[in-house]
Every structure is written in C-alpha cells, then in structure tokens.
Image (cartoon, rainbow, N blue to C red; front, side):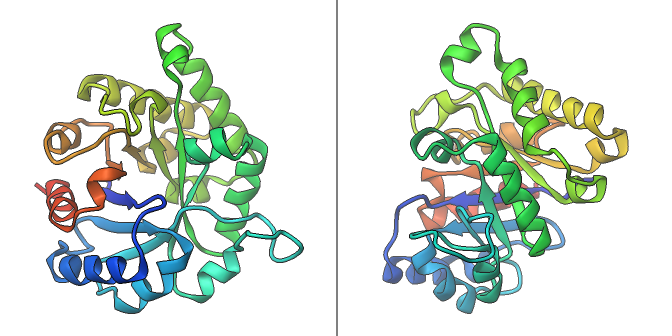
Length: 251
C-alpha cells in the first residue's frame, strides 16, 4: 500500500508574510504523516521561515536546485544549502523549468543524483505537450524522459522517488486530463519503471498527477489505482483548498 502524497507547488507566489499566514492556517489541520505526506514546495525566499514553523505532519520542499555542491553559478542554490535549512523535498524537472529555462534530461539526471546524495526527497516531473498528446507521441515522450532522467539511479533510490506526471497542456490552462486518462498515463509511467528496474520497484514508486488539480476533481483522481497523489499549483495557494486536497488523499 503506497502512502499518498499531496504537494503544493507555489511557483512564484507569496511574500514572506503571506507564506507565514498560510502555514499558520494549515499547520494543525494536516492529517497524520502516517496517512499522507503533505508538502509545500515554495520559493527559496520563504523556505526557512516555513521550515521554522512546520509542525510534525507537514513537510517543506524547494522548487528547484543545482547539481553542483558550490561554485560560480550566479542565482542558483545547492542541495546542501537546502538541506542545511531543513528542507526535505525538492521538485526536479518541472515542465516550466524545461520549457522556460532550457533544462534538459541530462541536467535533470544530475540533479536527481545530487538530491539523493544530499538525502533530499526528489519529485521528478514528466509530461507531454498538447501536440505530442494529439499526435500519439505521449508514451514515446514519457519513456524517453524517464530513461534519461533515471539513468544510473539504483532500485532503492527509485523506490523512494516521487514521479509527477504533468501533461503540459493541462498546467494552468483550466484543462484537466480525465481521471481515466490520468490513471492510464500514470500506469504507463509505472510500466516504464518496471521495464527499467523490476515489478517490486514499480509497485513501490509513488506517482502523482499534476495539471489543474482542484478541490472539485481531487476525489475522482485519488480514487484511481495508479494515482498516488497530486502536485498542485493554483489550488494550493489558498489555505482552505490545500486542507481539502490533503484530506481527500486519506478518504
């Protein structure tokens, strides 16, 4: 039985005061960490203030990191910097990072290796564009991403990895893959993991769906056998909605 995981991706939203106000509203309303992993992935400027205020049932994650330990990488943050302030999760390879900041599968692979080395829990994002979906290229694209992204990772590392399947055409557009499409595609992701590793690894890995997840569709998504949680954008910015999303995962 895989423990569900709900992760809010705040993207480039919330000032320090807004972040503190949010965590104070949700902290004592999170279900037990034994039932669901509840995570807020925030921008670098508010991570420390969130970590200082998190209670036992909430975890804090970053939205990106560099693969180098240190060096002349202006504007970047390393895994050890995140670890030193108490961050436990990190999003790797979000579609916006791939599309807007030219991240490649090769750089994403290096980031995954570094995250595991630092004992951070990575959330790896994969997903296809509308063109790829409409032209029957979804499976080819996803398998290609996974083969490159997971290269060199051990079975034990992959078992503890979280993969977020995010159809790019459903992120911030209001469009959502039907629960059936989302489940089938998450199932395909799981089958690729089994092909690359084995059934034990595929059964252990947690796969989230992301793409216009909201309070109105979370119940149906979470009822699907291959969906173990959600990576949530806009709907994670309101405290009441985030509380609803997290509790939906344990129904």
